[in-house]
Image (cartoon, rainbow, N blue to C red; front, side):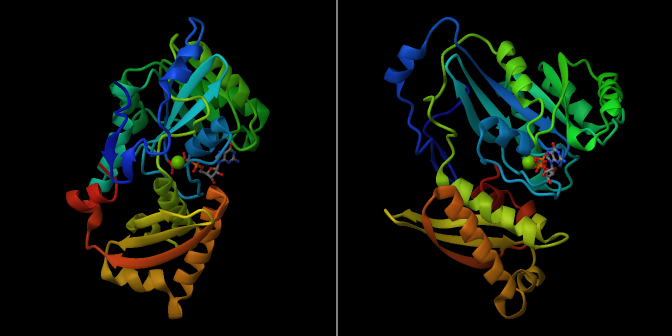
Amino acid sequence: MRCSAGSKTPFGTWPISFPVNYSNMDSQQTTSHRSGYVGIIGRPNAGKSTLFNRLLGQKLSIITPKAQTTRHRIQGFYSDDDSQIVFLDTPGIIQPSYLLQERMMDQVHRLRADADLLLHIVDGGHMPVSDDVVFETLRELALPVMLVVNKIDMLASDRIPVVSKSWDDHYDYIDRLAISALDGTGVDHLVDLVKARMPEGPPFYPKDDASDLPMRFFVSELIREQLFMLYQQEIPYSCAVNIVNYSEEPDINHIHAEIVVNRTSQKGILIGKKGSQMKELGIRSRKSIEEFTGKKAYLELFVKVREKWRENENFLKSYGYR
Ligand SMILES: Nc1nc2c(ncn2[C@@H]2O[C@H](COP(=O)(O)OP(=O)(O)OP(=O)(O)O)[C@@H](O)[C@H]2O)c(=O)[nH]1
Ligand SMILES: [Mg+2]
């Protein structure tokens, strides 16, 4: 079974807020209905999360100009009358240098068991190199792969076939197309191609649902997004966000979050002069959480030092990196 409904995650029982209603699904089971799992993979910063959000028509993944923003595998459901596609956003593929990055790459390798199809997203401004770790990963995953050349809004139109061909020379893709995840060019065509490749089958989830991840997961990600936007150099890469308490009231959500840092010296940088940086982080995060939930938020942020948490199996587990 692809999805262990009801399994325990660090963010709560999965799924919490999206129980599957099997009686609804019976009526949708027709022979022409298609459903499947599609992994979105590629190098950091290629635009995977931007595409993921555009495909789903809403922001489920965080996006920043910095590489290695996405650390988890995030499921989002695309549904229409005759199909349901579960898109899986994944961390950018790298050679891992520490345990957190190994855990991030595990999320990519899990696709082998879970996905029907892969979308290999490449930045149209980049040319391939033969020993790129992405090609090694594609071979290991041994799944059908579509080449998706992204960021064509930045590319002269006569460059598009040149870039596409150079990637095509390095791997046996089943399809190739060019898009701009940012402005949406080519994305409808991508959906049509993906749908045509999905096996016949019933939907996996109720058609109104967008994801099976609980709200506290998205809240922790939104805080992490602001960390990436506000702090420079190694700081965002050294932080984890741990939601200690998330309680919902009719008019307001109460959130208590810890920002976990890797070294004591990072604590001062995070807090800033007279707490100015933390204050700014709090303001930005609260605004972003309120936009996402559509409700007021009371957010308390604390900094905690956990020496070398990125190398520690137990810390990684408790912060959701398993
Ligand atoms: N011009 C342009 N920029 C894009 C496009 N797609 C994504 N970007 C930008 O590229 C940067 C990285 O986008 P992400 O979607 O976070 O990339 P990612 O592949 O998910 O990155 P990681 O999570 O770090 O692996 C952001 O600044 C995006 O705005 C595109 O089609 N055109
Ligand atoms: Mg991403």
